[in-house]
Length: 258
Ligand SMILES: [Zn+2]
Image (cartoon, rainbow, N blue to C red):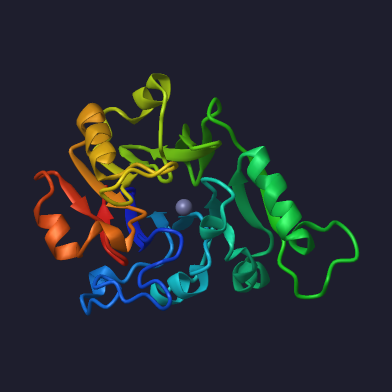
């Protein structure tokens, strides 16, 4: 059992995934497996701990593909469906392990309670419904899971705030459009940074490629991986080879060790 962090990119696509249903865009028709992107999520493992960042609509498939037999918790970045819609599929973990720990900002937890009321119900629980143990988190309070300190980092996703996470020398941020200098400081000196880059064109709530590269230039990680990618960014092969030397496009099921 290693103390190193093993990161698995479970999904690297934007909210509709790639291919988009019914799309004739050449990237959606690509036969390169790196152009098939499930909704964005990452598995972070160390020793025998497994934590996922977000739990989108492809969660079940992601857990099956990566044979994740034990889940120690879910860290939520924000409440949008592409990051939360798979929550019901924690059932197999709940049956084996009991209440699944979730780590979320209060606003996100409140949203989950509305949308998955049966999971959060205290009484008259439906038999077979899963349950969670909620841990409220915010940008000002680092917390510890599996003996490792997690530093939440806040950014803005247009009108709502999102949390990213610094875990030792690894930082994972997604759905960022702007970030304050104070929060940017927390990202500096990361060995590996994961950051969202949607497409070339500007977008109201996501970094485009240019903004992501400027942020990488500012915080200077040794290596950066881009995620939350739209088909409009282009073919993996072509986009990846034109990136700076220390920047790579992530792709589904890529694993790295930090
Ligand atoms: Zn998203």
